[in-house]
Length: 220
Figure 1 (cartoon, rainbow, N blue to C red):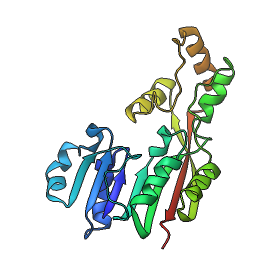
Figure 2 (cartoon, rainbow, N blue to C red; figure 1 turned 135 degrees about the horizontal axis):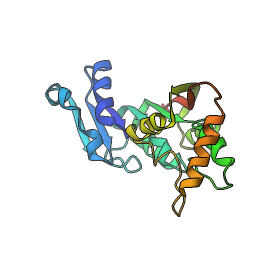
Figure 3 (tube, one colour; figure 1 turned 135 degrees about the vertical axis):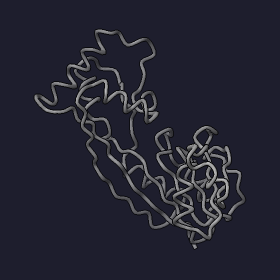
Figure 4 (cartoon, rainbow, N blue to C red; figure 1 turned 90 degrees about the horizontal axis):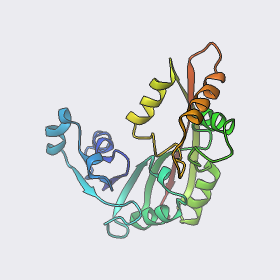
């Protein structure tokens, strides 16, 4: 059994099915809409060995020691502490089972963080987990031999509306940029945009993602 947990697990399940054609693949997400495959993939998806289940990664509806591989894509973004999810994954993995995941590190959206810091002292950008804290949580959950790597990606945009539109289209507009308890005034938001542009004089606007890859094993 192969389990894809969270963010776009429906799409991820197709890739897992291609990689492991003999496995039974299950996509799980709390948001049922994210489990639905795009229209052009709908019929092949239904004919595959993949299943889709609406479920929370913190309470997997699976028997203990029943899964060979768990894949999690960007689920940790929503968690202040990854340990409860890691402990649940450790519970469902068979001895020797593998956990693969991706998440974003604290250098993500650093340009937004600097631009907002020039405007006020309040936190506006999501506090992404540090790679070392993620590794410590894996060890606490008794997942063995954790290995992690990091990659910095920079995307460029001709203007701020295109950059912001990309964040919204990815579904990250509100999830990654922390919202004030009150409304952000127009002048303050425009000032932030100007400080953002000032970081790239005479060049396209950049946006950084720190992408963390990791894996660990269930103990034998």
